[in-house]
Image (cartoon, rainbow, N blue to C red; front, side, top):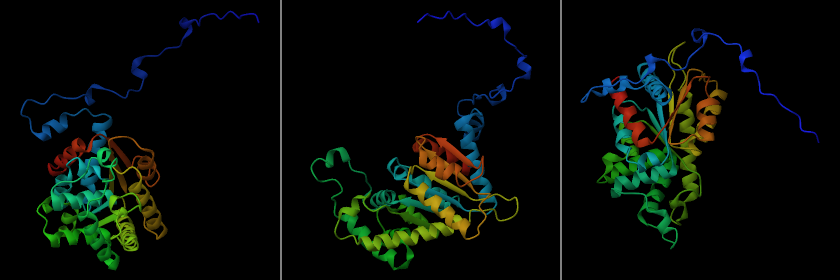
Length: 320
């Protein structure tokens, strides 16, 4: 086959225009400023560049602040890493300050929360204990959850039962428990269990039917909470659902709760959602940030919880 000769493009024929007629995404007004040594948090916060993650973190703070001023619910739905990276005191403080009106968590989060409150420590080294049959085989944790599940199945739900049971025990480290703080504040606390995913599910003393019933009650409570996330008045701010570190279970629960709320006639158009996680995941993006809300109403902040949550809290309590 004869090779075809290809001539280089003549770039002198390109049509150009002035940079003044071009739109720009970056300008000097948005550049980082340099706060002085010893500057206040407020000065430091204002010095952040006005792009991408910093912009979205500010938007998250503004959405939560607007919801609080407008009397709309702020819900934190949390995966286990919130507890495992030491951020429980931050969530407890936000509950006590009135920045969180309801919490939701998966089963693992509840386990770590309860263990931290009772024993002052949690989270085993799975790579070690999975090899000799010791993984998940402690006695005290399933004993506690067996009692809490029966209590929750009687009508109050799993999250409320765990919080109330912990408070009655007066555990030595209870001040760090998110569920204790929720019970003390009288806010909704729901635990959404996927059977077979948690260590306590391996133990015979846990009544699976009671656990399922208690968690099922919590789903209906979560639906009621989501139903309140619309605006209280025309053009007013809506509530905020903040997903923190749950990549599958809580985004799925949220999507179904939104479906229930809208099917029952609740207008959620003003609702905003925030996703805080270390990585971008498909399920939170679809089920939290895009499908349930209008364009621009979903806010994503990518970063480690042990960095983003302290920053979020400080900005909120500073009134920023």
